[in-house]
Length: 347
Image 1 (cartoon, one colour):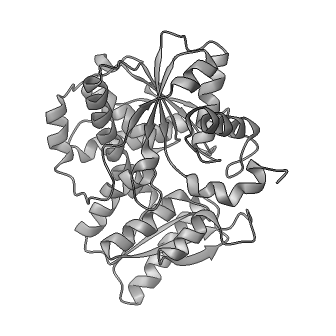
Image 2: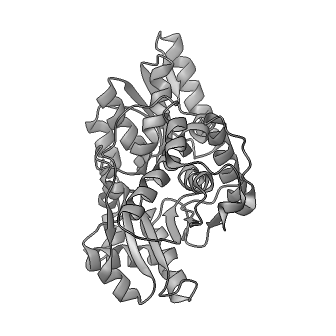
């Protein structure tokens, strides 16, 4: 998809000025590294592959949510909150990074966690949630409407107790989180220009804000990069509709006319595996391949499945040796330790 036919095309400085008007806190180590993957490239015999190390954002093992939380918690601080509420699965990378960010900012993190019975031990991200001082609320609330209701109910309870909570609702996340990945595109475009690299494809694990922000960023800068999102979860709502709403909500925060449409998004659900929250055979193969060619450890649920998608596209000839691909490592490595029996089933 060539975004040059869409307006407005902003200069990097103009886009930076718009982003700077949005409340933000400093949490991440930026810019994150952009590295060549020569042995992985050789092994796959396809396009030149680089990896953007969002796992190196620095906050409690890092990840893409640290970049996102700079904007989400910027809004929380602006509203005078003294505690924040988020909900997800018990091995949530988002919740782990929120717990760390809250600790750094002097806020209390309340995490509503849906238990998937991954392990009987407190391990991986859940272990870190406790270590970081988060208040854990286990609930039979799968992702979606039930989880949103549980978060809002907890917020009402905390208000009655005299707290000033900031609930990270779906609407909050859709408006502020994509801004972080507009900023990411600014950062990546500067890195590629500085290193004389001309990528034409970006692959990432996303079915929401991360890809939405990337597509919005490329559109605003007039870049022709093709952003391919590999979904880790299948939502009931069409992913292109979700992504369009996310991107256009973020555009409004930048005082821009929202004009992205569903056809501007390529999001693929073929690599989820059996279900969300479980490693897939293809993902585990990709995880091992990255580790054994580049010494880089992916997570078992998100980036590994995204790499599986990229590998499959290379093997099927959808990408050529003349292409240059940036693969985005969105983090999540701590979850690996909760899935040790999946990663090494014979251990």
